[in-house]
Length: 201
Length: 105
Image 1: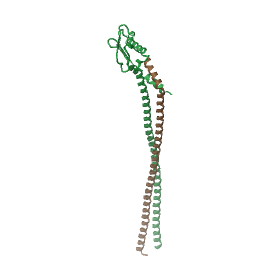
Image 2 (image 1 turned 30 degrees about the vertical axis):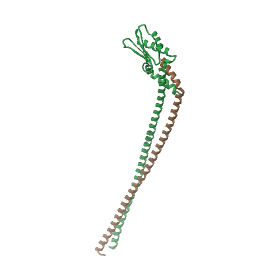
Image 3 (image 1 turned 30 degrees about the horizontal axis):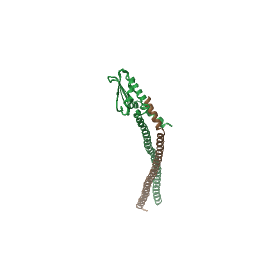
Image 4 (image 1 turned 90 degrees about the horizontal axis):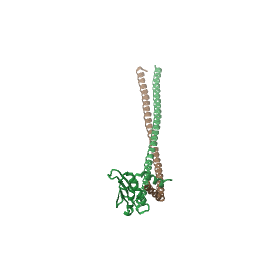
């Protein structure tokens, strides 16, 4: 009786210890899993942060550089434009002073001829006006006109810089051959010519 | 030993056995709890370290871009100087050609 009771007690304690040992082993295994999972997630999260940081860094770099490059391109364009405009103003000054040069008579003659030809009328009315041009300078232009033509001399330059405007008697056909009009008609060629002369390598 | 004594012994032994099992369960709970705290620390340290690297990457990118921007400024200044010199040297020729174009076109 006493011996079998002791065996029973031992078995009860032995079962309890085995169960306790299993519980601890299970906990340790689970703890190991938790740590491995935590390390894996930490690694993943870390990599995600770095990957996003690299993309963000590239965006920061592009943002700083693109705005700077844009500003600098505009500065260069502004400077080129300023230089070209300065040259055009000088050209306008020279054109408006043409009456004081020996080119004047030929030029005025040619402008009148072109204008008369353009309106294709037997009785063209030609207005002519240049800065500093004398009546004497301009009277000779009548010779270019057909017999029925009329020359009107303006005392002030036509369209700011001077030139010639021809119409038919009814005023239906008008040909503007002033410097301003020629500058506008030749605008693209003028800009190309100035740019290629100044900025070409 | 009487039957009552035997039963008492068994009851005492089972109580002891329950204590062993309960203590093991408590210890297991503690292991899991401490491990979860350790896991949280691992995550925090990793994130903190990654945030530090992120700051470094961004700072480096910004410094590099600013250096490139300064380089762009210098190149632009050189280009502007070149254009101004070209303008000084070639303005007269450009004006002559442009006047000729307007007069003769």
